[in-house]
Image (cartoon, rainbow, N blue to C red; front, top):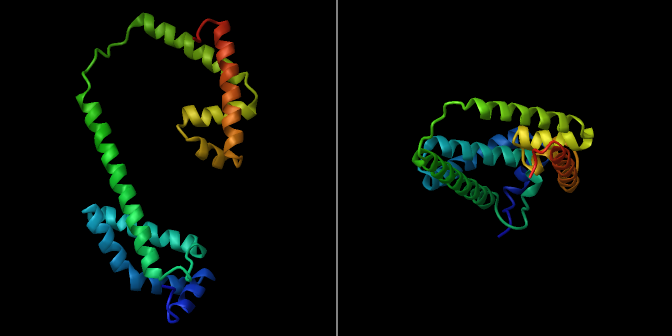
Amino acid sequence: MPTDNRERPLVERLVAGDEEALREVYHRHSPAVFGLALRVLANESFAEDVTQDVFVRLWQQPDRFDPERGQLRAYLLAMAHSRAVERVRSEESLRRRHRSVAEEPAFNLAPDPERLVVEADSGAAVRKALSELPTLQRVPIELAYFEGLSYRQVATRLKEPEGTVKYRIRCGMQKLRAALREVELAP
């Protein structure tokens, strides 16, 4: 059911960047968005986060709403449900990881002097090999492996296509492997 004629001017103002239109949309629809998020998440703080995320996304990308496909309320509720389910899955994954870590047996964590020397030598060899890579390969590797960014995040940070970033990381890793084999550190 397309957006009714009363709401169409409000949507048009929102797409044009009218902050007052966003306030009106928030005032009309935030209770329903929050209520749905709260039912899914059973946590007020998480529901508030989801509600905020829904309206921030609407403000940042108002043109993603197509009034011909349905009403704004249904669009916002669908987005809220999707974000809430993502949050549930994320929280459950986090709980599983915490349980897994808690169940792992504790090991003797006292440093082994021989291992420390080998690790220091290995670290120096890796740093040297990494520093010898071309910048176009070294930087994506550092972002991915030392800062923990995904390929997509590295691509965004470097303003490069994701495929290009993957290729550069793969080539750089091959060069690192070859350089470390020369000093007998790579498999």
